[in-house]
Length: 224
Image 1 (cartoon, rainbow, N blue to C red):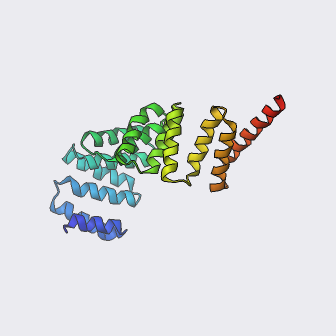
Image 2: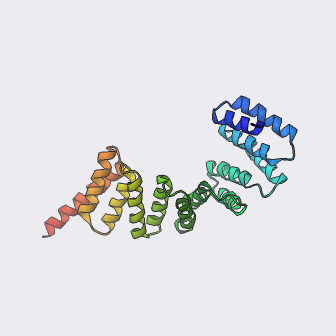
Image 3: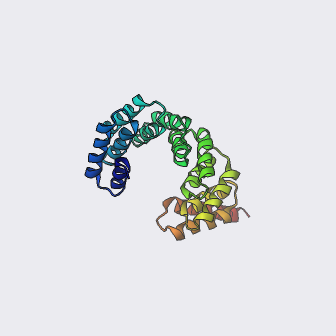
């Protein structure tokens, strides 16, 4: 196992000081290799030293502008700082340079989501679900974007897939309830909201949804 791998193992074991020492040795021994800077940048991210981490990622890109992992690291850094436009540019660059991983597409999609650009988020979140079809979070976030972009039928199908992976996903039931309510399927909506509350009794949105459904049913009975 080379020093980089040893340091990564230490990083995963949260032995940050020992990992830093090894990464530093790697950089000293190979100052023109971007990998050491990328790994040190990832370590600094773990230590909440964003400013220093940015410098290491940028140094890696200076050495190799096609270093996809450096662009991905920068994307994560900017995302945590809520600089979503800059983060999106970095994630896109990482993908363009060959980082064909679900996380990269997912994070790019989330950059657009956090800028309320629902339709722009869809192809990237979809690609993440294609690469990792059993990741319920990828599917759920894709479903939310579909719903917010008003593709309600596709959103419903996606939330149902989430429940196939996790039958106790209260937020998926809640969103199915919202869609049913929109289509005026009041009993179906009530059932989804009640299921969400059974799974998560403090789900305030589901409680409010159930209240709206009950009010709607009362109004309907009064009109008859």
